[in-house]
Image (cartoon, rainbow, N blue to C red; front, side):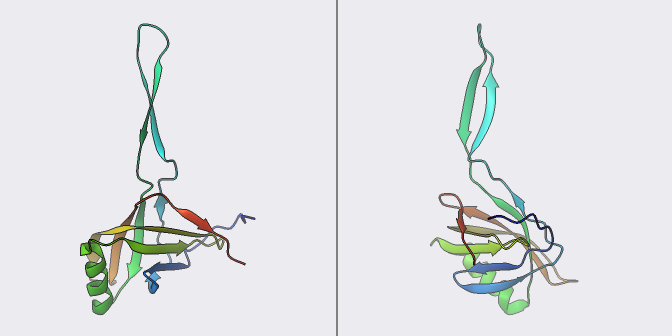
Length: 127
C-alpha cells in the first residue's frame, strides 16, 4: 500500500551498481503512456492519442570521477540497462532502458541524467 510520504529520493541503481542521489533531486516523472490531443472536424472533435516514452528527468547524482566514467560508459552503451530508483515513500520503480547525461557540475560533483525506458516502468513491492 502506497504511503503519503514526501522527501528525498533514497536509491538509484544501474545494473546493480548504486549511485548516490542528491537529497534535493526532484525526479520529474512522465507517468502517462499517451499524449492526448483533439483534432477539429466538421462534427465532434476527434481524439488523438500518441504513445510516448515514460521518461524520468532531473535525476541528480553526486559522483566522483570514477562514477562519472561509469555513467558515461552506461550512456554510450548500446545494450539496455537495468535501472531502478526508490522514492521517499519507499516505492521502487524499475525498467530496462538507457540513460542520457544532461550535464555535470564540478563545484558540487553533481551529474544530472534522464532515463528512457524501453517499455515503461514496473513498480516493485518492497516489504
